Every structure is written in structure tokens, then in C-alpha cells.
Image (cartoon, rainbow, N blue to C red; front, top):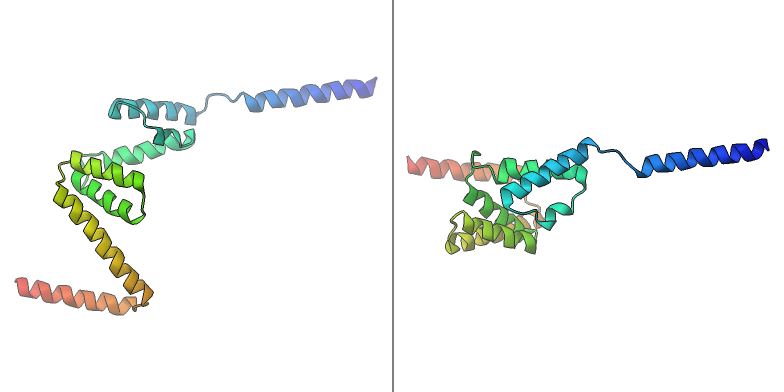
Length: 159
């Protein structure tokens, strides 16, 4: 009899723990995720699925990063420059989603077709020379010294 009471009590404790672990209370992460989703909706007019791929604990931070840098008009770089940079990086990763997004965002920020082409060309040039320098294992200290000398000469000529 005592053994069966213990078994019932053990089952009740296990069931109680199960209920506690499956019905989680509202957390700060839930509240911040809800606030972030509301702000995304207010800012963008909808909540794109890309945001919904993140766990709730990450959405507020991810949105704060995008809103604080990429969408912020009071940073050192203007929107067009930021989006062209995004396009350059996206072209090198490569990320078809990012390429599409940053191309359209650059256009929205008044980037011309020629600026978009030049951005992609610059990304390709940097990638090309990065491949050569890294693959050839060019000495970094020597490279830096030669670069400084070139810029000093260019500066001297312009004065």
C-alpha cells in the first residue's frame, strides 16, 4: 500500500513538472518579440517571413540592428551607400536573396543602374585581387608598406 502511494505521488510530481515545462509563462523575450513584430509591421507595412525564421529571443536584437544601422537616416553613411555596400557583399557571398533585396533597396535610395553595375564591378575587382594576394601569400607587412608609399606619392602629386 505504501509503495502504491509513493508511485501515485511520484506520478503526480512528474505530471506536475511536465505541465510546468510545457506551459511556459510569458517571458521578457516573448514581450520584446511581440514589440519588435509590431514595430516591423509599423515600419515596413508587413512582417516579411525572413523575420519569422528567427527564434523569439533573437528578433528584437535583429530588428534593432537593422533599424539602428541600415534604416537609420542619421548614421554616417546615407541609405544609397549602405545598400550599395550590401549589394557588393551579397554579390560575393553570394546570396540571391540579399542581391535582390539590396538592388531594390539601392534603387529605392536613388541608385542608378550605372551605380549598381559599378558596385558589382568593384566587388569583383576586390574579390579578384584578394584571391591573387591570398593565394600568392604576399607578405602583409610588405604590402602595407608599398600601399602607404603609393598613397604618399599620390598625395604629394596632388598638392
